[in-house]
Image (cartoon, rainbow, N blue to C red; front, top):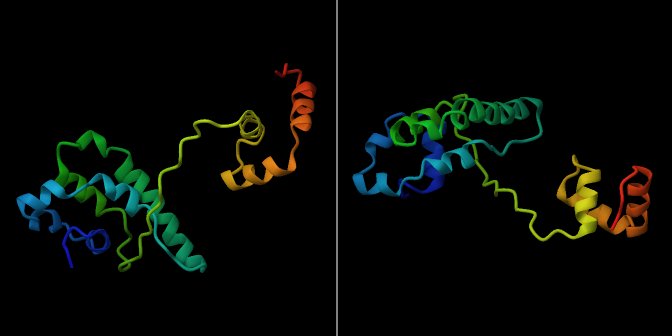
Length: 152
């Protein structure tokens, strides 16, 4: 397996292999992306047991506290970034780290969708999609009228 394959990198991270970065050749170090550590290391695939849910929370919280917080402050020190990444896992074995895509930008939203997002800021995209089908334009105008807002 390639040293720089993401599954190997996450394995090294979970095993807390602090020498991994030092073991890379100079060419591999150029290709190695410490930024991807933030995206991949924060998520783990677990079962629905309470113990596994705690591990999932642990990864997210530790990634935020140990990696996200000062990651770019040490951007000129990739080895230090790697060492920070190795602190994310609790050291309970190798986990599967799924890719979590960045949230899509909401460019070009329809007026109706913008209104629903404003009305229901805590709703997820799929919930807004459902609301788009359920709520009529007339109901949105009526809502704005009741709130004392002018509608166009």
